[in-house]
Image (cartoon, rainbow, N blue to C red):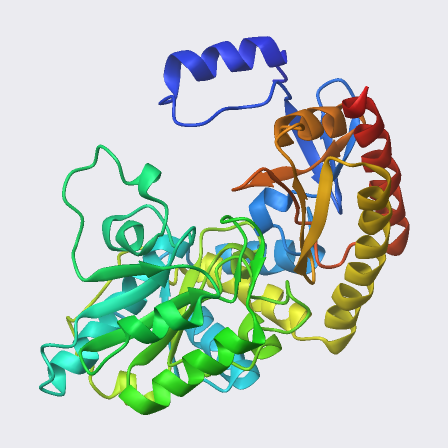
Length: 402
């Protein structure tokens, strides 16, 4: 039964742990690139569940896959072969050219798995001293302990006690700082192919070259966090392809499940060769229903036509955003690639003001660190919907500037 938004928010306050700031909207339905509230208002959704709804709302292939799998079994555990998991793994490995897949439930779990696999790799090879993992300032890898230690944002670690050790954070795109930290005791360099939460930060050509060179010189592993930037969002199936990185391990989540909890680690064979039964595990990871949805997602994102749409819509949105930057002094620069796009704002215009004004225009957008407006539309968003978003955002900028 539909309830008023005020009633829902009050219930939320009474029942749900106060860990999120929530907008006063009661969404009751999603369809394609749109969300509908209990008052019949239609919102253009350029948040997409924070890059989770990669193919929008109510994608028919995902719905069909979920319903079909529910007619067989919902869960059997990882004690037995799991056909939907195997089929998804086969498709991912075919598309990405990795050698093995491990499935879990979320991005932070995928990053925990990648970290453990990297350290176990060197331990099994007899190089037990290789524990240090280098990550980047303002990076975001998740909220469980090892992933949180890898995250380069001290504020979100405060108050939780001691963190797992041997994590070092260097400044994004600072090649000299990275060179100073990498040596024969380095286990891995871990980075996002695009640091979305940290401010929509892209990799420089020089940083990519430096990482590739250090990987070759010292034999350290490279872990690429593709939780937000992977699965087609940068216009390539995996984000690192856009830059030329050579990862040994890749973490996936968000868009891979099409709205269901699903994460994955993709491994090269030399990593998998050092793993044994019992080294890691999960109860729900690779759930058959989530994997059935994931296969439907993967097949669609692997289609060159969809990736072409990402590139075309990105160019369209960048052109429109650049017009806003030229018009408004508080808008400093456009950031991002593909369909992770940001507008960096100066301190005179808090990003929350733009988000609120956009919501009044029935456009959903979100923020990133550093007073950055972030946009994460579905990958199958249309040209007409991008024009609509730009018009709504222009109105929002004008309203916020008054």
